[in-house]
Picture (tube, one colour):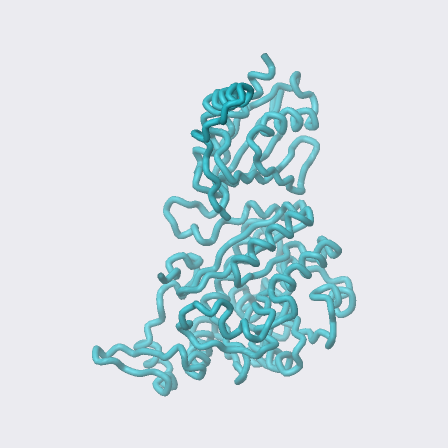
Length: 456
């Protein structure tokens, strides 16, 4: 099933190109297209030359870019690359950079021969975005620099050759060529594979791809695969901290995406956000994280839902209510203690977000199961089981929900506990999950009831 309808809403390639119109505008495409019996122009996506020419033509028509794509090097999938750039624009908007900064500086880890991400980013955000592309392979460095010069963007894009044998991903650059430099974001589309044979077919069971595979082994394979590569970025980010405000990467395998989320949590990184990139039958995953108290990533909208009439381009308006008086909790620390005690029975994941002040605490709430509904029934069931167990009889398994294999949470929400007139207010903003906004409202009501019971 084509996933193009879930592409970023600003992606101009949500609609397939009109090849009839393209051929009229760019006659050179006639060499790599055919015409069927109905007069429709078709392009063979398994032909490397056809794919290469189409990409060059679209870059020229849609972005005013003249890009050389050397033989033997990766031909970038334009809609997918554009999805990533658009997501970073969403990050820029959500964090207020577009309003508050005259210039946004980005770092592309492994820009490749095409230098596609820096060129796209600057073409879409000319005069605002300034990009540095890192590349290790000498001929790719030369090609990337040629593409920058060809488009008159040497003042906006700089290509830096990383030293051969450099073991770090970004720290080496920031310690030497980039001494004193700070970046608003970094991006990365790492080589997917760990072994050469994986490049051909990682499972042996997948159908043939609809488009030809392009790229050199340097572009497709790296030691440890994409998982180890992104893990290195995470480890280096723990040392670099706010030298880069937002770290990000694309991932090609769902299992690696899941593992990266576990690694982030295991390293104590709580301020992160995720997305998915769709194009045709292809899905990729995006992860971004930050150590800055001014870059709260829960504010970044879900790009895959922005086109829906039921979804907004920012976190929903928070549901809030007063939960404690200043007499019950004179300080923020005491208010937090009361709140966390009330939430403990629900077994929620509460990830503290940087940015806490003397009057406000912030968390990201994640619920893997609905543990807040029908609390009375659950307490009665627990008592019944306890009585049965004390009698030595086997307990019935009725009422015990089966464990479902789920990677997406039932509910995720942004949580704020802040001071108000004569007390403390709890505000919850729905971020995602099948429980919907009703789930947010139910948790808020649960907390109110729980704290009311404890005060009586």
